[in-house]
Length: 113
Image (cartoon, rainbow, N blue to C red):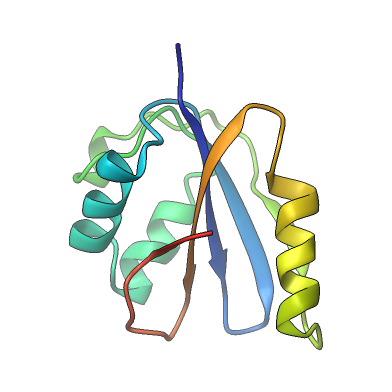
């Protein structure tokens, strides 16, 4: 059985990008890889350019993309509560157990939301 998750990235234009990940979405699997291998803006952007994919890997060349586009949402001007409500509405349920977020330009670690 799969453990589905979403990787969420907010770019500098306040666009929220969401990549669906089908396998191994547990925090014990995802957070170490995200925080070890996808911390720079360049690597995060490259990861998100793949679209939705099968499972996260340390080496981006080992990731199997599905070939479809990301979901995107314009969050410009939204307050934090509204962003939280958007994430809850769009990315909870439908067998999605976990969500992880990072802001481009922010050097902090990935967070589980």
